[in-house]
Length: 119
Image (cartoon, rainbow, N blue to C red; front, side, top):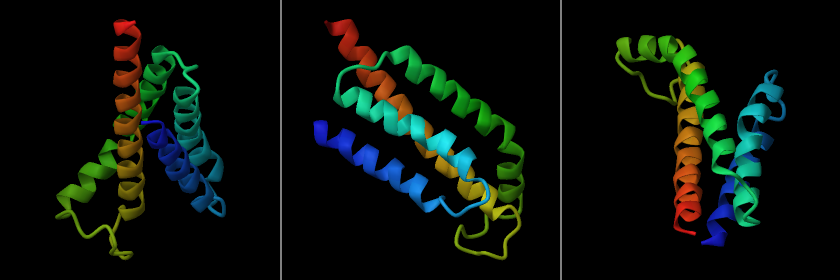
């Protein structure tokens, strides 16, 4: 199972690297870097589940704030994610990126919380 932590570090580290030349690089580093640190903390068994929960709540707040753009994209007939001409498409891609990050964070939270309650 420890290899899953390394995959998580690689994937979210790659997300940071891909955003390196964007104007909002610091924003995406702030969103993805905690996930890298959570995976490393889980690998070294040195992470408290409440820290992950705080991170997940911050991601949920981000998603709620940006839900209007997602709703607008959906109201427009949910055009293809690869259609660069569509309105709000970049925001929708970002929305799904944060949503995927949230799902991974919640998976870590559940796994680490369950391990702590069993011990």
